[in-house]
Image 1 (tube, rainbow, N blue to C red):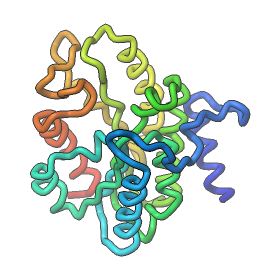
Image 2 (cartoon, rainbow, N blue to C red):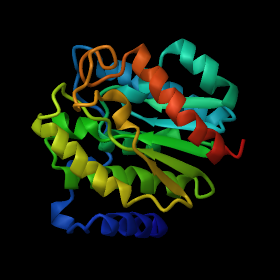
Image 3 (cartoon, rainbow, N blue to C red):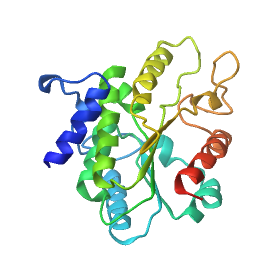
Image 4 (tube, one colour):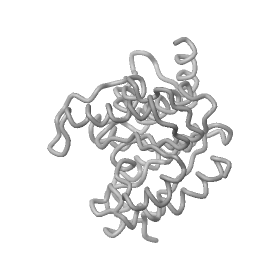
Length: 241
């Protein structure tokens, strides 16, 4: 436990430090307790239970951790590109960083020894927790710290948070930009490799086309294909393939 606290403290200091009284909600491991129209708590519990079984019994080389953006991979793309790499997807829609931390600490680590962990998290901290970029960065740093503690021999491919909302002029865009500037400091190119694929989803004027993100948040099948094609070379290098 002491090593885990030390590791987390180092990551928080990297993005500016945090006082105990100011710990944001996204840093605190939190079980899902709220039903949403698109997902009940019972469904969330079931998904987590399925992940814990995988963590306990399966051999996984490439692990994905995140929220609905990672959970939503097109099935055919997944089978084509990631299934052959002995992959598992531990992402659940609607999760903020505190939910991801709770899942990792309650069974999702199991007996796994992945070579590479792909992390994309933080966008739900904006809407669900009303957090600032600085607070969200602390939550993402906590997830990365937990992954490092669980699998110290693994590499981590930390994705920048994707842009969302259609217009380049949206105030959220500047918040995402600030967040990603903070997240970039977590990369050391030794264990944690920070990559920003967000421009894949933007037109030259910075808007998001509907054919790449139908709701201007989640990629379409075409958007996922662009992400896969951009990320796979990095994944293969980090897996040593």
